[in-house]
Image (cartoon, rainbow, N blue to C red; front, side, top):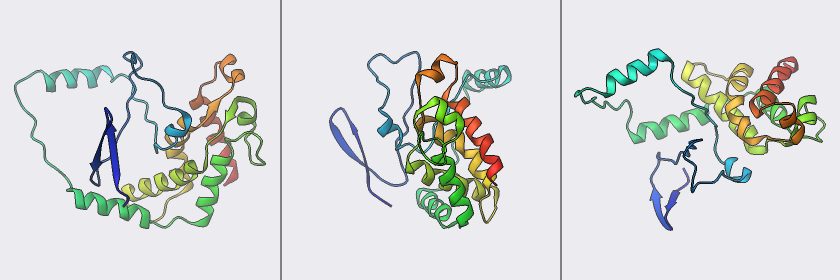
Length: 197
Protein backbone atom coordinates (compact mmCIF):
# COMPACT_ATOMS: atom_id res chain seq x y z
CA UNK A 1 0.00 0.00 0.00
CA UNK A 2 1.34 3.42 -0.91
CA UNK A 3 2.53 5.78 1.81
CA UNK A 4 0.15 8.63 2.56
CA UNK A 5 0.64 12.07 3.96
CA UNK A 6 -1.61 14.87 5.12
CA UNK A 7 -0.69 18.56 5.23
CA UNK A 8 -2.27 21.04 7.62
CA UNK A 9 -1.17 24.65 8.06
CA UNK A 10 1.95 24.01 5.96
CA UNK A 11 3.09 21.04 8.08
CA UNK A 12 3.17 17.57 6.49
CA UNK A 13 2.52 14.49 8.59
CA UNK A 14 2.85 10.81 7.65
CA UNK A 15 -0.43 8.94 7.70
CA UNK A 16 -0.07 5.27 8.52
CA UNK A 17 -2.28 2.73 6.76
CA UNK A 18 -5.19 2.18 6.94
CA UNK A 19 -5.96 5.79 7.91
CA UNK A 20 -7.06 8.22 5.21
CA UNK A 21 -8.43 11.72 4.80
CA UNK A 22 -12.10 12.47 4.35
CA UNK A 23 -13.25 15.87 3.16
CA UNK A 24 -16.49 17.38 4.36
CA UNK A 25 -18.29 20.43 3.08
CA UNK A 26 -20.88 22.21 5.18
CA UNK A 27 -23.11 24.31 2.91
CA UNK A 28 -23.64 26.91 5.64
CA UNK A 29 -20.21 27.43 7.21
CA UNK A 30 -18.03 27.80 4.13
CA UNK A 31 -16.36 31.10 4.96
CA UNK A 32 -12.64 30.60 4.42
CA UNK A 33 -13.13 27.32 2.55
CA UNK A 34 -13.38 26.91 -1.19
CA UNK A 35 -14.74 24.14 -3.40
CA UNK A 36 -12.03 21.79 -4.65
CA UNK A 37 -11.16 21.92 -8.34
CA UNK A 38 -12.53 19.04 -10.41
CA UNK A 39 -9.05 17.48 -10.73
CA UNK A 40 -8.82 17.20 -6.93
CA UNK A 41 -12.41 16.01 -6.49
CA UNK A 42 -11.60 13.18 -8.91
CA UNK A 43 -9.19 11.70 -6.34
CA UNK A 44 -12.07 10.95 -3.94
CA UNK A 45 -13.68 7.59 -4.68
CA UNK A 46 -17.19 8.54 -3.57
CA UNK A 47 -19.33 11.57 -2.92
CA UNK A 48 -21.87 10.81 -0.21
CA UNK A 49 -24.60 13.36 0.37
CA UNK A 50 -25.88 13.26 3.93
CA UNK A 51 -29.09 15.13 4.59
CA UNK A 52 -31.04 15.67 7.77
CA UNK A 53 -32.00 12.61 9.84
CA UNK A 54 -35.62 11.46 9.97
CA UNK A 55 -37.71 12.54 12.98
CA UNK A 56 -37.24 9.11 14.63
CA UNK A 57 -33.49 9.16 13.97
CA UNK A 58 -33.18 12.66 15.36
CA UNK A 59 -35.08 11.67 18.51
CA UNK A 60 -32.72 8.69 18.92
CA UNK A 61 -29.71 10.99 18.48
CA UNK A 62 -31.06 13.38 21.10
CA UNK A 63 -31.78 10.51 23.53
CA UNK A 64 -28.34 8.93 23.14
CA UNK A 65 -26.29 12.10 23.36
CA UNK A 66 -27.89 14.09 26.17
CA UNK A 67 -27.48 11.71 29.09
CA UNK A 68 -24.54 10.79 31.27
CA UNK A 69 -23.96 7.38 29.71
CA UNK A 70 -20.70 7.22 27.81
CA UNK A 71 -20.81 4.78 24.91
CA UNK A 72 -18.29 1.95 25.01
CA UNK A 73 -16.23 1.66 21.87
CA UNK A 74 -15.75 -1.93 20.79
CA UNK A 75 -13.49 -2.28 17.75
CA UNK A 76 -14.67 -4.86 15.24
CA UNK A 77 -11.30 -5.08 13.42
CA UNK A 78 -7.78 -3.85 14.07
CA UNK A 79 -5.68 -1.94 11.54
CA UNK A 80 -3.93 -5.01 10.11
CA UNK A 81 -7.26 -6.81 9.67
CA UNK A 82 -8.69 -3.77 7.91
CA UNK A 83 -5.72 -3.67 5.53
CA UNK A 84 -6.25 -7.37 4.81
CA UNK A 85 -9.92 -6.67 4.02
CA UNK A 86 -8.82 -3.95 1.60
CA UNK A 87 -6.53 -6.47 -0.12
CA UNK A 88 -9.36 -9.00 -0.15
CA UNK A 89 -11.58 -6.59 -2.11
CA UNK A 90 -8.86 -6.20 -4.74
CA UNK A 91 -8.63 -10.00 -5.04
CA UNK A 92 -12.34 -10.31 -5.86
CA UNK A 93 -12.40 -11.21 -9.56
CA UNK A 94 -14.16 -8.84 -11.94
CA UNK A 95 -15.32 -10.47 -15.16
CA UNK A 96 -14.20 -8.70 -18.34
CA UNK A 97 -17.86 -8.00 -19.17
CA UNK A 98 -18.27 -6.13 -15.86
CA UNK A 99 -15.11 -4.08 -16.47
CA UNK A 100 -16.35 -3.26 -19.99
CA UNK A 101 -19.71 -2.20 -18.56
CA UNK A 102 -18.05 0.06 -15.94
CA UNK A 103 -15.83 1.66 -18.59
CA UNK A 104 -18.80 2.18 -20.92
CA UNK A 105 -20.78 3.77 -18.07
CA UNK A 106 -17.96 6.22 -17.31
CA UNK A 107 -17.48 6.99 -21.01
CA UNK A 108 -21.23 7.61 -21.40
CA UNK A 109 -20.79 10.73 -19.25
CA UNK A 110 -18.25 12.28 -21.66
CA UNK A 111 -19.56 14.60 -24.38
CA UNK A 112 -18.17 13.92 -27.84
CA UNK A 113 -17.40 10.22 -27.34
CA UNK A 114 -18.88 7.41 -29.43
CA UNK A 115 -20.50 6.02 -26.24
CA UNK A 116 -21.86 9.36 -24.99
CA UNK A 117 -25.34 9.17 -23.52
CA UNK A 118 -27.89 11.50 -25.14
CA UNK A 119 -28.49 13.18 -21.77
CA UNK A 120 -24.74 13.76 -21.36
CA UNK A 121 -24.54 15.23 -24.87
CA UNK A 122 -27.24 17.70 -23.90
CA UNK A 123 -26.28 18.59 -20.32
CA UNK A 124 -22.63 17.73 -19.59
CA UNK A 125 -19.65 19.96 -20.30
CA UNK A 126 -17.06 17.62 -18.72
CA UNK A 127 -17.48 13.91 -18.03
CA UNK A 128 -15.91 11.38 -15.67
CA UNK A 129 -12.29 10.38 -16.29
CA UNK A 130 -10.57 6.99 -16.11
CA UNK A 131 -10.50 7.01 -12.29
CA UNK A 132 -14.29 6.68 -12.43
CA UNK A 133 -13.96 3.37 -14.29
CA UNK A 134 -11.48 2.12 -11.69
CA UNK A 135 -13.68 3.16 -8.78
CA UNK A 136 -16.82 1.71 -10.36
CA UNK A 137 -15.07 -1.67 -10.51
CA UNK A 138 -13.57 -1.39 -7.00
CA UNK A 139 -16.88 -0.22 -5.54
CA UNK A 140 -18.71 -3.12 -7.19
CA UNK A 141 -16.12 -5.56 -5.84
CA UNK A 142 -16.47 -4.14 -2.32
CA UNK A 143 -20.28 -4.28 -2.47
CA UNK A 144 -20.17 -7.90 -3.63
CA UNK A 145 -17.67 -8.83 -0.91
CA UNK A 146 -19.84 -7.26 1.80
CA UNK A 147 -22.78 -9.35 0.61
CA UNK A 148 -20.60 -12.47 0.53
CA UNK A 149 -20.79 -12.83 -3.25
CA UNK A 150 -17.71 -14.17 -5.01
CA UNK A 151 -18.14 -12.01 -8.12
CA UNK A 152 -19.60 -8.51 -8.52
CA UNK A 153 -22.62 -7.96 -10.77
CA UNK A 154 -23.78 -5.17 -13.07
CA UNK A 155 -26.25 -4.28 -10.30
CA UNK A 156 -23.26 -3.71 -7.99
CA UNK A 157 -21.79 -1.27 -10.53
CA UNK A 158 -25.13 0.54 -10.88
CA UNK A 159 -25.53 0.72 -7.09
CA UNK A 160 -22.19 2.48 -6.54
CA UNK A 161 -22.36 4.58 -9.72
CA UNK A 162 -24.21 7.63 -8.31
CA UNK A 163 -21.63 8.13 -5.55
CA UNK A 164 -18.72 7.44 -7.91
CA UNK A 165 -19.88 9.61 -10.82
CA UNK A 166 -21.76 12.59 -9.34
CA UNK A 167 -18.71 14.62 -8.31
CA UNK A 168 -16.87 13.83 -11.56
CA UNK A 169 -19.48 15.21 -13.96
CA UNK A 170 -19.64 18.95 -14.66
CA UNK A 171 -22.92 20.21 -16.07
CA UNK A 172 -23.32 22.95 -18.66
CA UNK A 173 -25.50 26.06 -18.59
CA UNK A 174 -28.38 24.30 -20.36
CA UNK A 175 -28.63 21.81 -17.45
CA UNK A 176 -28.77 24.67 -14.98
CA UNK A 177 -31.40 26.48 -17.08
CA UNK A 178 -33.50 23.30 -17.21
CA UNK A 179 -33.16 22.76 -13.45
CA UNK A 180 -31.22 19.51 -13.83
CA UNK A 181 -28.76 18.42 -11.12
CA UNK A 182 -25.69 16.28 -11.58
CA UNK A 183 -27.38 13.43 -9.74
CA UNK A 184 -30.42 13.70 -12.06
CA UNK A 185 -28.21 13.39 -15.13
CA UNK A 186 -26.16 10.55 -13.65
CA UNK A 187 -29.36 8.68 -12.67
CA UNK A 188 -30.63 8.95 -16.24
CA UNK A 189 -27.33 7.65 -17.64
CA UNK A 190 -27.42 4.71 -15.20
CA UNK A 191 -31.01 3.96 -16.19
CA UNK A 192 -30.02 3.97 -19.89
CA UNK A 193 -27.14 1.60 -19.07
CA UNK A 194 -29.60 -1.09 -18.00
CA UNK A 195 -30.35 -1.57 -21.69
CA UNK A 196 -26.70 -2.46 -22.43
CA UNK A 197 -26.71 -5.69 -20.42
